[in-house]
Length: 552
RNA sequence: UGGGGUGUAGCCAAGCGGUAAGGCACCGGAUUUUGAUUCCGGCAUACCCAGGUUCGAAUCCUGGCACCCCAGCCA
Image (cartoon, rainbow, N blue to C red):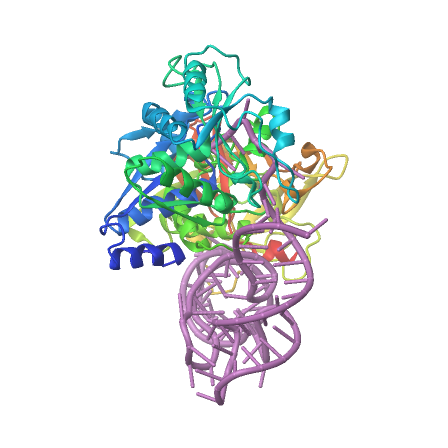
C-alpha cells in the first residue's frame, strides 16, 4: 500500500460510508493530441494506483472529442507509454467517441427540457456576449428559440447541413454567473471533419465539459480525478450529470498538476519544441515525456517511485530535477552492472610493461552483489584514461593522476606518471607511466595508501562508442513562465554533448536497452550495439553524485 | 472591481485541538580498489501576517496579505 494523500482519504471515507455502494472506479482520460509526459505519469499512478489498492478499476479512456488536433500516432504512443509504465496491459481501451450516440441523446434531452438551445451567433459575437471577468454577459437573441426549432436545427447540424462555426448547441444556464463556465457554455460545435475512430459519421462533436462528465457517468466512474484548472468546471460537470438521465453521478476531485524545474510540462510548449525542431522529436531523451525518459534510460520503477515521492496535494509546486534523478540513481545503483568506459580518452603508454603482452584481470560486476558475477578485463602496455583524471598542475587534495603521483588503475595496477607528451600548442597528447609490477589487481604490496582509483580501457581491445551526454534542456528553472523571451534562447546549449568514447569489450554482446554504470561516470543505456567492435551508441541516463566536482 | 483555489525548511510533504513525520538538497564525520554506494550525526522555539477563542492553536474563528487559475466553437 502506498503512502496516503487527501484523495485516498476521500476514497477510504467513501468506502467506509458505502457512498458508491463500496465501489471504486477511476479513469485516466488522455486527449490524443501529444505524447504523455511525467505529469501524466503522476495522474496514471494516482488513478491506476487507487484502483489497484482499493480493488476497483481504472478505465483507460481516450478523450477524443476534437478531431482537428488528434491522431492515431498519438493514440498509439499513449497506449505504449501507459503499458510500459506497467498499467492497463489487459484492459480494454475505451473512447469518449464510443459514447457519441448516447451523448447525442443526452443533448436532445436537454433541448426537450429547454435546458439547451442552438445559438447562431458568430464566434466573435459569442465572445462579446459572454461579458468579462468583472461584467456579466448578456443573453443571446437566439436563447428563446422553440424546442421544435432547436430540435430541427440540431438535427440538421448533425446531418451536416451547415458549415463549421455557423451554429452551436449551448446549455441554458446563467449569463450573469460569476463563474464564466456557467455563462451558457457551448456543448456541441460543428466540425465537418474526419475522426480517427468514427471517421465521417459525425459532423458535430461534443465539447470537454459535456463529453467528459457524461462519459464518466456512462462508465459509472465514482472518483473523477483531474487537475486544478478544472476546479471551476466542477459546477458544470455536476450540471451536466444532473440535468440529463445520466445513469450515475460521479464526483470530481482536483489535485495540483506537476511542475518540474528546468523543463516544461505543457503540451503546447512540448509541441512547440518538437515543431520548431529544438529537440529531436517527442521521444528525444531530453524531453520530459515518458518516451523521452525511456530513451534516456529511466526505468518504469524509477518513475513510479518519483510519483510516489512527490505526493498528491492541491498546493502549487515546482519539484527539483534532483528528486527525479535520485529515483533513477537509486534504482540503477542496485540493478546496473558496472563496466569501465572512457568518455574523453587520453592515451597512456606504460613503459615498463611488455609490448607484446595482454593479461585478463578479474573485475566485479557489482561491488555489493557478488551474485552478479565477475568478468575479465584486458590490460596491456597501451591504455586510455579519462582526460579529467589527469592534471599537470593539480590543486590540493586532488587524488587522481599528475606528474610524479601514483594512482590505482581499477582492478589493475598502481601506476605513476613519469612524463607528459604535448603537441606544439601545449595540449597534453599522451602520458608515459610506470607501474608497480607487485601491485597486480590494485593491491599495494607494502600496504601503502593510494587514495585515487581511476578507470581505464585497454587500447587494443577498446570498443568505440558515441556517447550522448544529456543535461537539463533549459537554462532557467521555469522556462514556461519566461515572458517575452524567444523560447529557443532558453535552451541549454550543452543539453546534448556527443563524446567519442572507448568502452571495455564486455559490452560487445550487450542488447539494446541494457543499462550499465560506467564506473565513476554515471549510468548509461545502450541505444545501439556495436558492430564489429565499432560504433556502439550510449545515452547517459544520469551522472553519479560527485562531491569532488561539486566543490571544484 | 467577478468567480474559484493555495500558503508548513532551499524543494516536495505529513499533520485533522495535546506541543512540528518523512524524502530530496545541504553541512559534518566513519567505511570504501567508484571522490559512487552504505552508515552515523546535524538541519523549522516554528507553520503567510495580525487579532481572537482555549488550560493548550499549524490545526477553530475574524480580518488582512501574497501567489495561481478562469473571459476557446481546446482539453
